[in-house]
Image 1 (tube, rainbow, N blue to C red):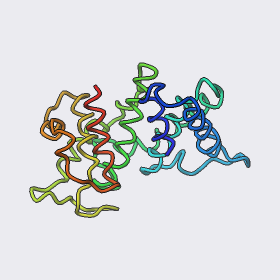
Image 2: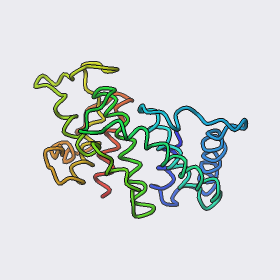
Image 3: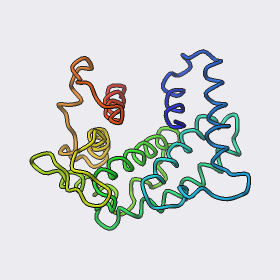
Length: 217
């Protein structure tokens, strides 16, 4: 939710009512960032663990922190610093050659948040702080494609079923841009007109997000 609200505030570029923006930023601070800093001084497990929840939650905290940095600079800075440090543990899981231990479904889910984080950093600071260059990370796009069979069923090991989700199209387009490998880019999908897109399940929303971000660029 923090990631979604932060993106909405940024993408609307001041077109929302000031009161709405104010409520959004206040919520990011009070209900997002501050709750990630427990009053007892403990650290939430997702900050430094190695699974996809590390990528998901740290991405949300980074986006929220950038959105409210002018209001809470110290809180934003320490949260971003913690998340960069914490994401190291999740990104190490891609080494040495891109195979992902949680299976292709969670490669798609977790990786899309790391991709978004890298893009946010580049947009805000002109650098992704090395996220894209972790050993095996870019190579993982090849892994993702090789785990899909000709029948469109997935190689379903670890925490993964056989049915592909809608994360891959958006995520792989980022890898295409970074590596220059057009094999990763589903050009036909991104040229599809919005009214021609079929109904999608709510957990496939990142696929639509991918199309919107592509059109905006």
